[in-house]
Image 1 (spheres, rainbow, N blue to C red):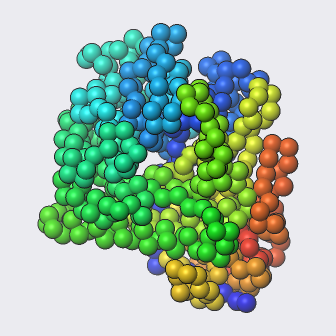
Image 2 (cartoon, helix red, strand yellow):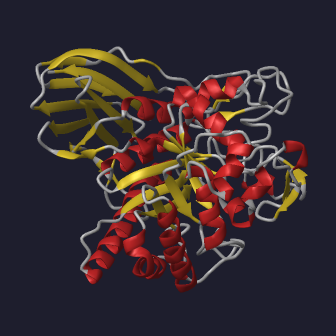
Image 3 (spheres, one colour):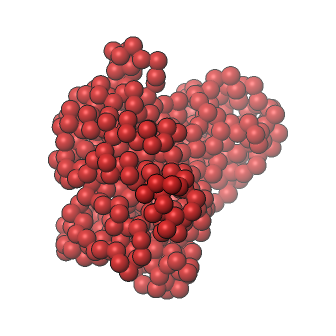
Length: 500
């Protein structure tokens, strides 16, 4: 089997916004407590945050982390997480039926974010709260000094403002499960007025409006059109959420979920542009795909979880090799749509449907799930300009797509380093001869070549056995503007080419 990829220096999709490689930390399960924060762990720093987890987060090079939720935020009172830790209240978290200790709040999380080199994408509670609390939180975080809330931040230990620039106007407000669930009109009006008030506090911020919780919601489409009709001129991004799973144990169908993601993105873009045309607006709304991942392995186990625990072990999916392949495909789709998808958040970062896992003890090290590796490769090597891929490749058919290409691929040109990085997933079980033509480039050297291949599709990692890991790829050849290689069956591939 053969596949050909044509790339051109002149055919570009977009400069990639680095925030497309973002992630997510919610106060749920063991994401915070027992994840990033565990004062009793042997690697904990003097603030209680695990250094081994910080090291793995730094390796991922995550530029943006959404916080503190998620469903959690719709019942969250942010003031509970400031001031002396010993005086903070313990609260029932209704979203996940657990107990929130508030040991970690905005100050602690901000300090952690600075240590791992990421920025915060802050969500405000538009479920049980509203305009006043959102503007107060923004003033607390971003105003320099001289007001009640900014001076309280200084009193609580941070003289300089946090300067958080990306803000989410609530979370999944279309979902009946959401605390304070609203109709599209109710949410659209509230989001519009909240956005206007927040911009009066800090006009430099960017705001994300809640889109649908998934493309399968019964209100999908009507929700987007309605909330945008209210808030279009006052926001910058519309959110998308979607999770994927191999419930039917059908590998070909599962690896084609990236095509469903592409359809979802393009449908939401069409709705944003329809509202733009209706309003005769000069403004373009871009997308924040701020929850996406594989989520299904833990569904049955979570039904057994007892309520009102502190940091219960929930949503702890144990990922396998086929999940890593799908993550590679999904990230390629995000880059193919990087002209409009400017922010994306892999949900989540640690323990809860996450690339990083920890054990429930004070000695074991943090470890890498299978999905860690394609995300790490994309985040570190996928920054620059997305080149338009023109792919000639055999296809297969699934129950919902007539032509799924056996190869999913994208290339990114880093003009500062003069490197073109090619990412490719082979969905076939057979080896595919892959030829790439780079018009406008001359390849001078193969800087690095990586593959994940020849694993059982159900193989996974654990704290004691990291069996699914990348290795060097040794068959890449080049001449002038041509690169060739063999894509092993069911494989993830990364090739970095020095060019001039």
